Length: 394
Image 1 (tube, rainbow, N blue to C red):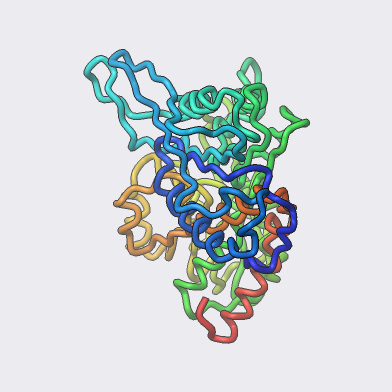
Image 2 (cartoon, one colour):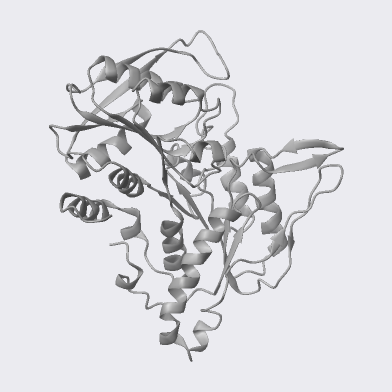
């Protein structure tokens, strides 16, 4: 279960804990820090006089860093306190386009490239003084460019190798587009963490009348790439699973990709059933809307779309329209990447908070504990389902 007290944290910490939310990830970093401070205050009494636990209980684990920029747009990473011997966890949100800087008098929004460069600047500022460097990068930088078609760069593999060469020991990401990119750094720690439990918990908190059995509910994968995610969730919940595959026109390229001609459905009847569409990201949202339209045409009941990362690159208008037309009943995404105030205000939006989960992973890794039980949420999902069926508060 996801209770800190039930884990055996017998190992002494790798080093004093240090948390560095790189610019753009401060809000999530602050929530994670609050959990760590609370938990360690509760258990610090056990280790009060143990020298191996010096610096175990603190008012904050966040280390003061900044990345100032020159007028030309160039920058440098600065750490304003000692990190010698610390077990450092750097958190970075490469999708936070709301951060701006001045470039020769022009206002520039930070791109994923800028955020990745800032991460490297902070690692460079650590200068090998930390005991261990761990990077928590929820949206894996360049993860959509994970395989080569023709003469193309392999950006994600290059980025991972660059971090490994800079001395990063562990990289934690969430629902990687293709986890096989870890083959680029086979001798380093790389974990891709699922968000299935938080989706189920978020949905059950919002909707009080769901019947979670194979007669009333179904899991749908919007494409063949996400079938493993859908199969896992369907097996844990005991539901049927269906999938769409995208027929593309490979003779054309529109906005950097081959346009989709049609969505073909494979699976049993969805008639009268509530449906959860599960995916790793909502980018423009066209696929989700088209899949929902196809499901409604097949007489599906309520439709919920769950994706780890809500990018919403073309705005929210099409989702507003889909909600008004009764096409989609709810959209669930996590707070792992930047969420606009507009998104958070939508009546159909369900926010799944991942900060407690990240704090738990950091706390366990700092003790050199195994995180394998945390990476498999099936037991926690069964527990929350039982509470839901018993009418208890989740």
